[in-house]
Length: 317
Length: 266
Ligand SMILES: Cc1cc2nc3c(=O)[nH]c(=O)nc-3n(C[C@H](O)[C@H](O)[C@H](O)COP(=O)(O)OP(=O)(O)OC[C@H]3O[C@@H](n4cnc5c(N)ncnc54)[C@H](O)[C@@H]3O)c2cc1C
Image 1 (cartoon, chains in turn brown, blue):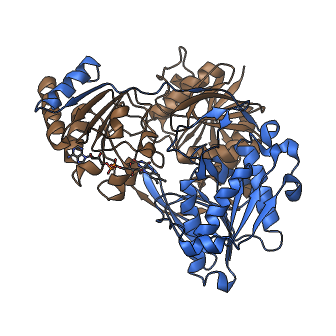
Image 2 (cartoon, each protein chain N blue to C red):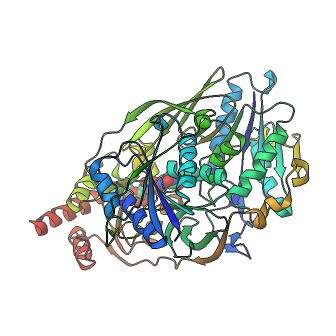
Image 3 (cartoon, rainbow over the protein chains, first blue to last red):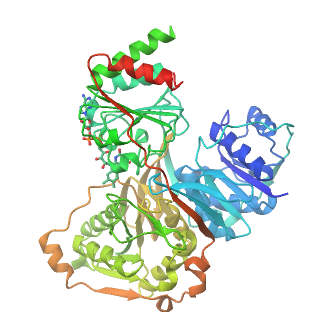
């Protein structure tokens, strides 16, 4: 049976939904194992077992986080060899994709990014050209490396859990030689809202919010949603760059995307047009965002959003 | 200082984009210099300008790999201010995936650095067509250079490079020594436009055309045959059609909630 190695960088105190999705996909392809970096909490180890991980691999060194990408790829390459894996799954974040990229060169393995589904024979499905096309792609190499978008499948624990042992993988001494070093790290304050990439609902504001994200935040909180933004709003400094949706920000595929005061430029659409349902609120009936909206309101967001928020609260009360 | 900037000729996203042919590759008939590479070029120009510019012996080489038309990305880069251009073009390159592309570009970079190796290779954060961001990391791996990617700011002090890289939960300060490979985001600067003087000056600048033979790459290692992944099928996603559009008459917020309730999204 194919050995499938899932890479989880710093699992933290509880596994992200994206990691559970990877484990679920791994089981559909073969026998799953996990290579992690960072601390492994007992709860996390138990969850990995519940999701069917047969073996856990950890690096011999604790300083991989002090370097950018390269040394983590060296560790992962060693883990793939130790595990004799033929498929490697990682999340689709910028850093995970870069680790996958270098891993591919180290192992002579084909890398496929932005994967949304994987067939049992290894064929990967992905959306390309800003979500306007879908393709299937396959690696022709002995090992395939796939980076999978979150919200691709519903995570599902294994029928029978496991109690995997942990194997330490020797990180090559040369791994950090030609590497950029991370000399300072500023943690960003947690918002208490769902993670943008994984959120079921995203409420996003653009230049139309004119410096005031209040109505967007209130609606998001009433819906339990994450907050997104257009580049015009992040460039203006009204909200952090991590909230940017689009070509140079995040790509999201939530169940619901509510766009408020955003015109719907091609670079914005690139990040949200695969959402299941799109709602747009914009003053200008000619805005391109209405071409892709399932429900569009030509109106002032400062009227429409607070009214919707109040109505949701009323119904939920 | 010698900087090589990688520039890609990509289908213009303002038009409908298509995947065609046996390898399901992008149709390049309406192509432009990738917008994201303009930030790379600007970063390179600012670095040499702060060090006395070309007069002080600094240069920026714009390198593009692609079919005949890709020379236009190089020409545009020369108009914007690159010192010289290089165009890697060979029929055998068609259909190259990231691994094959990075193999060919790494060889081209070594070729251009045969006399004096480049101090910096700068790329955009992604191409606007492939959108994978694999090639910069793979080049760092192949060239064994420190990788400073997704730089939202960049400073060079002597041989030391300092960049800011924004992650989801943290922002990092990254340091490396030259030579290094850098990719920059669209947060790093405001790219300049070519002006009349630049357009005229570009006509006198050299563009070197390179074939696989020139850079010592076996054609079997690149293109569709040399690639490690293949696109097996491609389908245009049914275009989203506009749904119900209403004009707010004072109760649109309520109607919005009714729509969400009907879609079981509350
Ligand atoms: C290389 C590159 C990369 C880019 N990457 C991205 C990206 O990742 N993400 C992104 O979003 N953009 C990106 N852009 C920018 C993109 O081209 C647009 O400029 C940007 O999306 C516009 O943001 P906006 O819709 O908020 O602003 P605008 O286009 O100015 O639209 C504001 C909208 O708000 C409406 N409005 C104003 N007031 C109200 C009100 N009170 N109530 C309701 N509606 C109101 C207006 O009618 C208008 O439609 C990129 C551009 C480039 C060149």
